[in-house]
Amino acid sequence: MYQLIQRIIFFLKAQTAHGLHSPLVFDLYTKVINPNLWPFQKDIFDVELEKFIESKFELKSFKLLKINNINELNNFNPTKNQVVLIHEPFRNKLFKEKVELVAQNEFFNYIIHFFHGSIFISSELAPRQTFYLKHMQ
Image 1 (cartoon, rainbow, N blue to C red):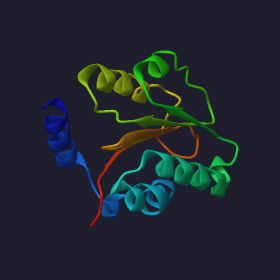
Image 2 (cartoon, helix red, strand yellow):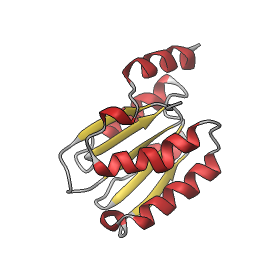
Image 3 (cartoon, rainbow, N blue to C red):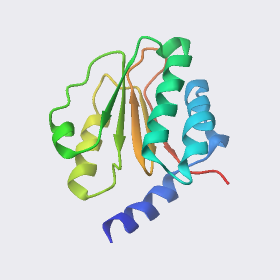
């Protein structure tokens, strides 16, 4: 029931590519997130995200950290030049609260939520922005 309520709340906030003003997030959404949301396959998404990071000049020196469970999230220590992918951030209330704490960290200025994951990017290229993205038909 918790996930159903979170899904409804999420989709009321979420947008598609039409409102994205960040070129980096627009590319990430159109090349990685949207094409891989339906059906969502975690392993394929991870590979596509890594390819995207390697292809972007401004992210080439970044390291991708994947977080899959509460223990990894509790032991997480953010650093500069980091891209963090958290799988299933809305799985339960405690996990969602921990993800929200990570999103508040000053290192991250791109906070990108889609229902199956959250991506945090530590970059000095833009002001702090938060995005909620949904699958575009």
